[in-house]
Length: 320
Figure 1 (cartoon, one colour):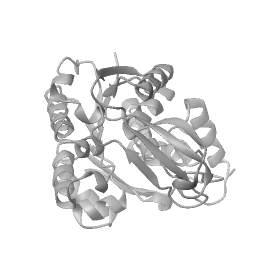
Figure 2 (spheres, rainbow, N blue to C red):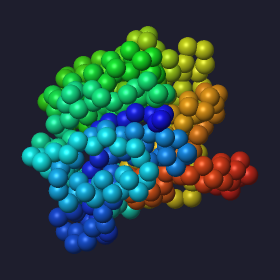
Figure 3 (tube, rainbow, N blue to C red):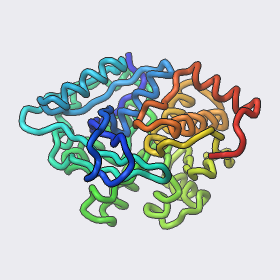
Figure 4 (cartoon, rainbow, N blue to C red):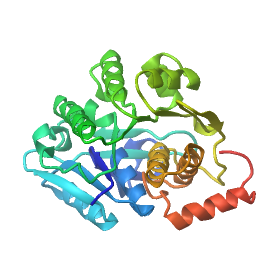
């Protein structure tokens, strides 16, 4: 039986092999991408089980994603869609900073996932539901699925972890985005916003104020990601900052937040202390920064333990 339920849109990412504007790039490397699928992959590498729910087009990219998910060993609930295409993206290669990503997902197969598609999913044996704010931005159907799956989880007493993962370009306008995402967050137990997301969603980038807002709405724990400054965590009984974990190089920032979520979720599943849970999250986020794909840097348990031991022994200087 799987431990974690996830749903969303897996995408094929074509990553530029050379720096420069995407329109000038001739060669791309193909990868599997998508926030929720990254978390599923990360959990599997730490020996946890997950099931992933989505719709895929009956096309070449859809078959590629099916094969990749199977290779990773993820339990899948895939609805085949013969009418709509599988989404993909083009990602810029950068030497510094965040890459530009062009998405081709409007009216994709995944955006047509509907509440009826999840009616036969058995929640009784699961231990946690993880969701992001991306599905609710894709379509009205996916928004209905988001609230429906939250309701099913709550009826089963399943804790819910939520990463806002803002995608402003997918929303009708900012007001709708804020209203919907805060409505989702107030139904969840563990909230993982970035400080810039907090500025949009609650009107402040102060991590204490962000955490206080969501705790007042019913959350049990809030961890605010602070980029190179680490993270701030607050629960009803604890509050603390942690510095970012040091690494030797930054190749790409994409996927670091998903790695952070992997650390939090796995720590919860294993009953780690809150401090140790967030320490793991910071470590996995840092490891993902070393790689160019969305999930190539997500570590196995041995890799994670080796990295933490290296950090403890001072193998890296400074933060990232």
